[in-house]
Image (cartoon, rainbow, N blue to C red; front, side, top):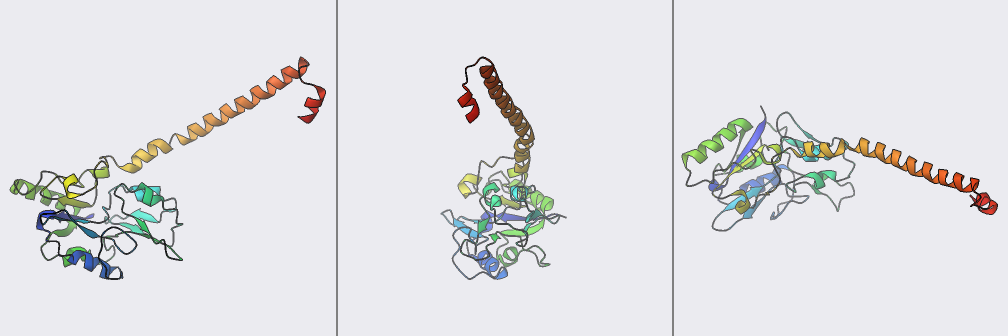
Length: 249
């Protein structure tokens, strides 16, 4: 069973219990979370008119961060969460560039910096602390497919309360974190324009041509070298290069 998380924006009251629980569960100092940073794995966006939207790692089904990591410090677990191993990390921060949702951050002011992101409380039997702390049930966890079915059921049952779209069903090839709410994803402040195809596949399409480019480039350069040397030989034969110049070469 692949774990997922469903965030129902219509039920969020903006109390911040999820944010506080996340900070406690990850040993982070209590603070007002406004964006992702080394001590913030989740935060609330106030979209006005009592509309609050929580951001966290989307835990993509085919994570670009893990695909971009050259040392496998990030990996997609069979249980669903995308986890991070600081002992493997070499600090290249390719994951930060690759993530289409702008989630991973870095401990810039640490002598032993790590990449920081939500791991969906992987390995904890009680599940994500944020979901357990939510007093209204705005965040629930369970099997991703079951949560997707529940999201669609809620939309169908009350079409006036919900925008008819489950964010995360297809974004970047699908994510473990799903959203439903009263407005479209852009109005909720969720990243749009990430596409529906898994980003690692797009990366591979480009990278698989690298050997061809290298081979072609090598042949091309070899051709230029041969032409240059051939012109010199012809010039010598015709006497257009002096002995002094020939000696200097």
